[in-house]
Length: 553
Image (cartoon, rainbow, N blue to C red; front, top):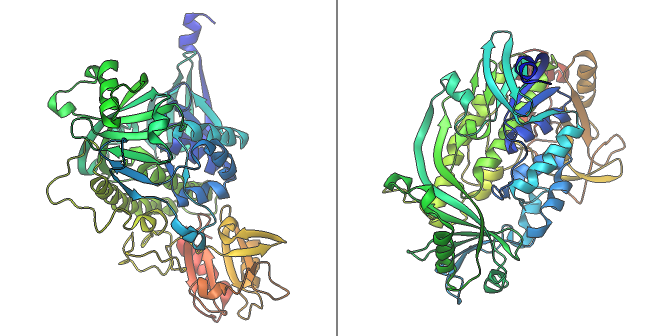
């Protein structure tokens, strides 16, 4: 193909959803849409997935989503090297016994098993993204790397976007029903839409330095940390293991606001800084790369503009401490995916898509504030908080509440208290509408599963095995007569039960209702509605709830 042909080559495609951005959030959006059978195309300007070991903390809620999507095992295999690393250490240097553990274990005593079938996973972005890519492509996703968005126009009936292959120069026009912008903190899509941001703005800057050192493992010894904050005032920074042997990452403070340039971080300076921070003057250090990054606290003022949606860093930026930003972005993608599937599939009205902003933006605002507070608690290198900023009562305060206990007081829920805090003071997963549905270990067709494994492709109704109120029959009839995917399970020990709880667990008590009541769970695993007891007409009650939630049934 000659140069003239390359420049003029142009094709047009129709697709329900176009995803712009192929990092963690874009790939997660592709994965979740693929699981729901929604045809889509993803474009990413870079040639491939991330090559830098960053964004490693995947919290329990994120791992629940990946479990349901069938990729948890693959992610844990990719993360095997750091599977034994736990806790955060803060110390002047790594020489001697000075310093303290901010916490030693993510889940001391294994208490998290009461709330979830999953657990945290330390998997760097460069290891995680290829797993997501493989599964997304296997599900039929059209993923185009080295392809950049040149322009887009959004109208009442769809989005017209022009993209360019950076390898061939070919231009392609996509006629999409919806566009999801997962194109990073400097999102060109958000900028074109004119969506402003709220929040304090820039917090601090670091240079992420990758390096090799064979002797450092001996200095670290048996301290298998997730991250170590080294606090020598002349050479502070954060040390992260890549393989616990010879590959490491060091985050060094960078002060561009003082005129400091990236070019000043020469190999010699980086080597000297790392040696002093570690406390070993002749430590072998071979610099293999460096990348600047900026921490900020911003949230977009709207997550939706017509047929365009923001997700991940384009919607929110957070301090990196706690890895809240990437997890919040992946959870954005999960919330949006089932709603797009519902509207594209014709079983929900357009109004359902408005609940994406109503639900996810308050979560980002609350979570970003908690992330900044955690940076204060950990004295993150380079972060000088404003006077009066505080982090609460302790370094582990409220982490599980933020990761797992966040709520949707308003949105696609019926019966939620709009005054409920988005992040409650204590973890309470007892079936309240707007909260993540409780985890219960049950037997289903002879297999031990979690009730959370049931929530992905349909609404799910839970009722008693003897079904005294007729909930099950009403749900079955409604599913047959409408296009709404609705699955009903009777829970208990009776002959009609599809789910049998393990031990002496009482499903109705766990879900905050009675044996005569029922609980309706959304495809994303959040409680949509519950009835504490029987109603005169279960079928009419269910239909009314679904109509309210979806805008059409």
